[in-house]
Every structure is written in C-alpha cells, then in structure tokens.
Length: 68
Image 1 (tube, rainbow, N blue to C red):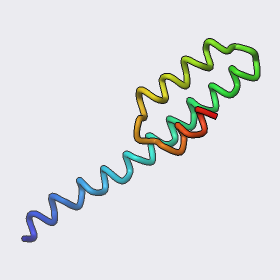
Image 2: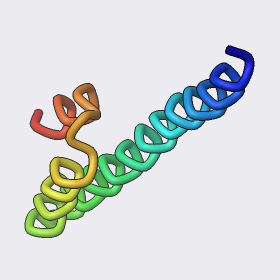
Image 3: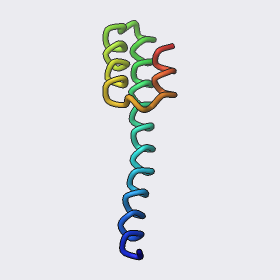
C-alpha cells in the first residue's frame, strides 16, 4: 500500500504541474498572435492560432479566446 502511494504521488504532482506549463505556453502564443494581428500580420496571427489548436487542444479557455 505504501509503495503504491509513493508511486502515485509523484505522477499526480507531475500531471498537475504539467497542465500549468501548457496554459502558460498557450497564453504566450495567444499574446503573440494578438501582437501580430495588431501589426496587420494576419497570416502569422492565424498560424499562431492554428498552432494553439494543434499543440494545446485541452486548453479550452485559451482556445475560446483565440477564436474570438
């Protein structure tokens, strides 16, 4: 029982911290897409949004912001 707990705990911590990193990276891409859009670089902004959709499909809040 103790051995399985020692195995599950690091896996759970890894999964929880991994999600936060993805959110930050997706937000950074969204910020970059917004900068490109403001500079009239529409093709580059669209590519960044497409990258968010491909690389971070579970970041629903960021995807929602990207599509607006």
